[in-house]
Image 1 (tube, rainbow, N blue to C red):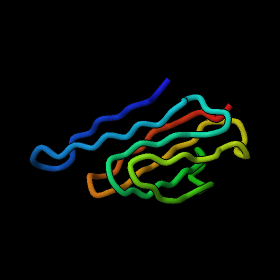
Image 2: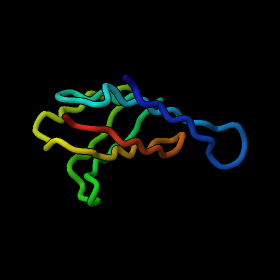
Image 3: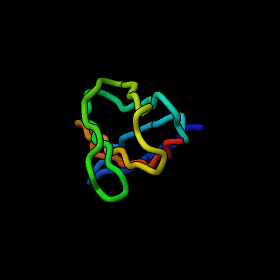
Image 4: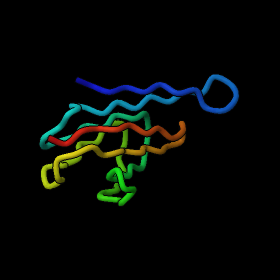
Length: 88
């Protein structure tokens, strides 16, 4: 299952799209975002557990993460989006 968020940003017709899958995830999380982007994964206490960058699609190993809910924030030229995902 994929979690998808569409968000309208500011004025005009700019919109961004982030896709994060699978959700829940056990090993490899795929992140799709148009263009170059930075990502930051935090736990629910706000502690940063991983950060990095990608272009269009990035696969992120979450195998070593403890089971639980995490938040990934992705930012690029089209804006910023945040999605929760569950590590099994």
